[in-house]
Length: 266
Image (cartoon, rainbow, N blue to C red):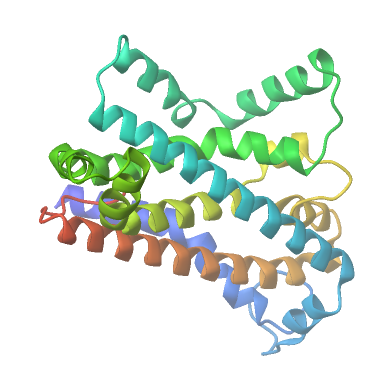
């Protein structure tokens, strides 16, 4: 009974702020307070006419798309190597690769800022944000793809090569179709992580801010809070859709491999 009460209280504490987003996003007042004054969609319409927001959205989508592609590519290589090959210090190397999962983002952001600006003397741009997002997204991609590759029989590729296919051709024709649901799921997760990430983008963004950094800038102006609520509502809805699609694809990949689903992504 006590565990059930704790679980309910935890869920309320976790999701209550998110539930408040759409409530105030449709509220016809600039003050975030109860009681609500009325219903309106003007704050969503204001998003359509804000050019700075459009630039931030385009910037975030570009960064997220490149991050998803690069992170998933690295994740495929790492997961395949970890599942199908034996090499010295394998566990130690894979452990180091997964280390960003447990490192605080503020530490990663400050460290990368020092390395990029002070040591290599590079300017901040979209590519500095992409490099950092790839660093933190790749472990998630590996965690998702590990299950897909560990349940494949290496003999399938070997049989294809015995029939005259090259190693790349055997991978493309045999392995890739089997792990494709995991790859798409991995890309969606990496895309969502990059799209929503704020701390690293705040430290490493150049002249063009990402969408979370732009939202933070709006918070300094109380009159812009309803617009922030409207934009936050769209972001939450988009994240839920992407994560749901990723989970569906992950489960489909598990079912295709004939495995029993034991939980979420990790």
